[in-house]
Every structure is written in C-alpha cells, then in structure tokens.
Length: 478
Picture 1 (cartoon, rainbow, N blue to C red):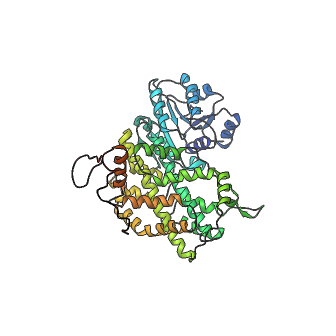
Picture 2 (cartoon, rainbow, N blue to C red):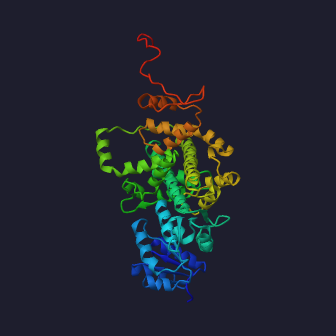
Picture 3 (cartoon, rainbow, N blue to C red):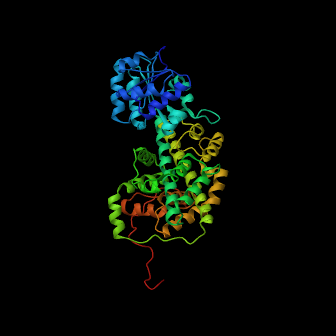
C-alpha cells in the first residue's frame, strides 16, 4: 500500500473510530498505540479498508506520506506532552501534529509556540459527538494557523456529520479550537443539568411513573423546540430496564455525576473575562454537590422532610415544563456565546459565531433545533446577543412565566433546580434597567473608599462620613 495520508496516535474508542470513519470514505490512514491489542482491533475492524498500523513510532512515521499529518487522541494533560516529546526528535520540518483531545486552551497555546520554534506545526481541535460521532460523523472545531486547517480540511470535513454542509470548520487562530470545545462542554453541562432537574421534577413533584416520564421525553424528541441530541438519548435511557431486578436502570445508578474539568474551566475563564454564566456555573456546582454523597446522606437524615406533591393536572403542567426547559436551553447557549464574544476581544481569536453555531447544529452533543435558529441570527450579525434578537426576545417573553412557575413550584416542593433558577434570574437581571448595585457600590465606598459615580452629575465621588446619617430614625415610625 502507498504511504498513508493521515496518522492517528491513540487507538482507544475515539481514535480507532475516527480512523475507521475516514478510511471508509477512502482516506488512507495508519494508527499507533502502545497496546498491541488495540492495534490489532483496528486492523480487524478495518479489514479491506486502506488502513495500517505501526509496530512502533518509527514504523508508524515511516508509513506516512510527507509532510506528515498526525492526530493525537490521547488523554489530555501530561500524556499529550509525553507523546509530543517522543515524536519531535523523529519529525521533519513542516510535519503537523493535531491534538484532538480536550486539552486546556492555555496548554495548546504553549505547545503551538514551542513547536513553531522547531518548525513543526501544531493544531488544537475539538471533537464532539462521542464514539458514535467519531465513527459516523462528528462536530469538529479546528483552531490554529489557517494554512494548517486547509491542509487537513478534507479529512476533517469527511469525518464530520453532514447538515447541508460538513459540521466541521476553522473557528479561529491559536487555541481557538480547544477554547470553543471547552465552551461547548460548558453548555453541555448546563443542558444536562437542566434536563436532570426536569426529570427530577416530573418524578418527585408531578409523581409521574417512569413510563409517563419517558413518554414526555419521547414527544419532545420529535421535531420541535426541544428536539436535540440530549433529549433523544434521555428518552432512550428512560426506556432501559434491568431485567434481573425489573427496575428502570437509571434508578439503579448512583447519583454522583463525574466531570473531567471542561465545565469548570469554562466557569473559571468566564470569571476571568468578566462574563456572567450562572446557568453553567450552577451545573458545575451541582456536579460537585452530587459528588459529596456521604455528606448529603447525613444532612438529609438530619433535616428529613417529605417532598411535597403538586396538585395539578400533569398533562397541563408538562406543557409548562417543556416551555421552562426551552427557555433554559436558549439561555445556556446565550451564555456560552457570550464567553466566545469576550474571548474574541481578549485573545483575538477571530471566532465567527455563525460558523460555530453551524458546526454545533448537528453531530455535537449539544446539537438541537435551537441552534439552527441561532445560526440564522448570527448569519446577519455574528456578535448579536440572543436577548436582543426579535425572535428570541419574543420566545423568552412568552415562555418565561412557565420557567418562573417551574422554579417556584420546585422551591415550594423542596426540589433543587439550581441551573434553571439561575437561568431565570440571569434573564431577570438583564431585563432590569436599574439593579440594586448602587447600594453595593455605596457599601464599598463606606468600608474601602472605593468611590462611586452618580446618575445626576459627572465625576467620581467619595463620601467620607457615611457613618453620620443625614436623617435620624424615629423608633415609633412604622
């Protein structure tokens, strides 16, 4: 076989499926993994495809055409640096390394600089869609030098899900690919938490059995406002029974959600950029609370109180739950795109929000029908906030009463709904012309002489005698 066009280091589920995907479309590939069994599995599953494996790194590199295009799908962190360190002495100038894992964007910036000094190209790309996406069509966010993207564009676009166009594209310079994927995962955290809150509400407040709960998600999974990957998989999950104990499998799973850090990174960088994303922050917080299972059990025992039921017709209430979740989805997306807008200002990525929305709208974990409309909005103005768009402003205005009712009912019934409550308050805060931050600024000036501005005159002011009230309190005056 002629030398392969594309190389993959890391033949776990994602790397192997990605190679199988492109090979099925006629792009020759060679894979390498320290585990010989994984190398053999690629050959077995890729029988009759243009695929080879390398017995070691030198053999792997010898089977690649020059200049080499080498993708890494290995765990983020020190392992990426370790693989790069082994590769570099064996590479030639203009070879290209592509990191397809969930690396932190600051690590990507560092690696670009280090390898550029050696004449070796480096790109960070985000790949969303899980193992099924890697095999049958993913959502791919590429960052780095434009000429590097153009060099591998045909591979990435063939590996991507197709939705009128490939759901793959160049999103910006430097570490933009990994930054966009990080924000994607932050939105993913928020949407998953919102769905979990709705599921909890249906089960514990509306008292729906698992069949009726699944029926609601089944209906929502059809074409409509909530049509999305996460709703689709939720309806599948709720239909899975453990036949040995004859219980829904989801109810047998320990209620401690794991995380790999990308949601937390989104919260951290948003804080640094001064961008409020309370819906995403709350989702991260709820995963952290879920991890403290033993403490929750002790506190629940100490404050044992029954969950109140909710005296309504479930069918009518489900329509309001649908509308509440619709608002939550929109506001989760808006907060994510707000981070991307700020990143453009701070890091000069040149991210086109329309391109990102189109890449995400199929194949990604967060694809949904909402993203199709968001892409339409950004096609006219890539920097527009959804809160100022006529369509979304109308949707939020009409559906917000349902979200307020959901949050209020959850609170009265002692059911946590932190992420949807944060969405409600985010919207309420932004539509409030005058917030009580004037009192906060007065407090800051009182204890720290931080000064303040006034609404009636220009200038910077400080009041040195806050502790000498201008008027007295009459204790008898109600």
